[in-house]
Length: 442
Length: 117
Image (tube, rainbow over all chains, first blue to last red; front, side):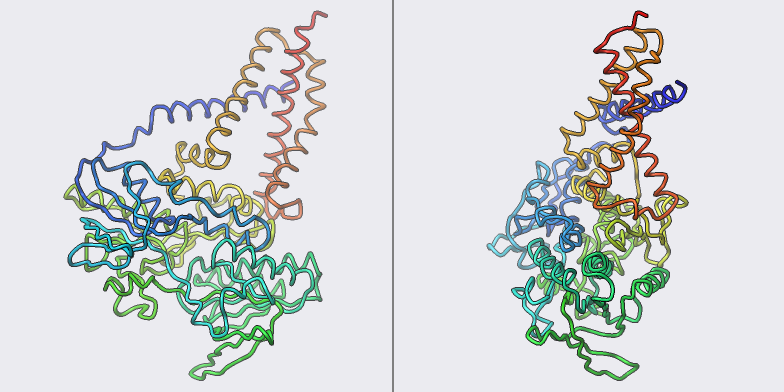
């Protein structure tokens, strides 16, 4: 009896919370400031995670602003889901939606690619020949995958002859699983690599290696396959404490590492990948055999950015990321320009989690500028990575510019522990949180 | 997370289930809870007979809830990795047990009416 009553009490308590939530939702957030009236012209290049989220937040904060999104792509991609698609855990459709599904009313979409930016004249030209003048510009076009940099490789190979590349999009991620699945059933040598440039979600190649290893282990079984991981860097992850943990996990799983190895070419006929290996000042070529190869190409800022004079002149010169202040995301030479997401020239920060924390900062500084004030919000480099270590477990790793771990749930969810709860978050809560972020609600 | 407010939580839940389904689920939970309180107030007593059935249903509710969560997340018991995972597992089981027992008790009370004996 007392047990039932206790459950009933707690359930009522829970429902009371729900009722309070309903009341709050109906009343609207009390913290919401009054809208700022302005005639400012704001152009946002890119309708990905960053562009869509900032468009929604600005539409919420500003009254009368002319907000224009420029993006030629009709499909919106939930990119954090690509790892799951490439492991056969979700269908390709899991990551796709329409760009227009997420746009608020009052924001106009120019469904064309941006062709040129003139930061002096403050205009953006599109491929269709439209010229858009702006008072404020937010550049969030994402990045480009430079597959041409890998000799002998082309995207039409993905899915055949043991070649995968999940970064290329949902269909390629699904084809990647076709190739990976064959390997997990038949065994052989699996080879996962990462590029030498900055990249989207540096945890993704590790996740893919862990997932394919786990599925092969449950499939063809240990002893029938080998997993190898090659990276141009000297360590497995940019954050030293995480790199050490991954090194131990790789050792535990028997995943062999090839550090200081940069992929240069692929010979699909002979199933050999050629790497440039650095030992001190010496550079040599090394051939590694594979039955399954996962390719992640070098990544760079889109040409429109590199040709606009917005890139760093002394950093990442081969990659062209936007020269912005790492704390405010504001361009260092053109204060009316902000960068968000993958294209921003900040260390780390090419993840949806970074976007979630960068967007409110840009919103604060942009709205303050419109009001003739100085913004106060800062971005400390926060990013997070639910680092999947097998189907069913992940480590929730959160860190900042200084390589400090910054756990959201200290004492509850241990950052360096392989946990089921972190996997549950990745599988259930992450996409919902991402979608809420797109709508400017999280 | 920078701001885990109630509004954010509601937005996330709406995205998780779809706005319609989420509020339908909230409404169903509210209706069952209200009905449960109604029969308790109406009967002015707990019926031990109905409560016995409610108690017997609890393990089924607990197991069903755990298996449901595992099925929709491609995971299993072998993935329990730390204390917090056990707490989550027991929490899911407790929710399933409590929810089903309240449902069973309320359904019996509403269908069979007040016991006269």
